[in-house]
Image 1 (spheres, rainbow, N blue to C red):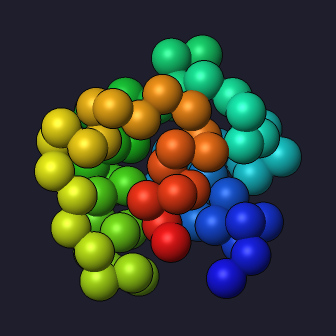
Image 2: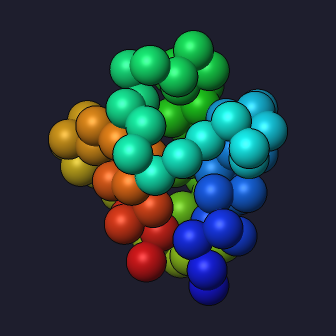
Length: 72
């Protein structure tokens, strides 16, 4: 799966347009990155990638690229 497709999926989980995200963006700078977006991302990983992520792993993510790496 391409990073572009992953960005689209991530944007959907956050409730933003994919064009608003880039790999180098810091999560703290994304207004929509909140607890609900975190939960949506965890569900996305489980449903689409059959992966589970711990709260600690998610907390270590600082950039969009970090989230994309969890989607591999």
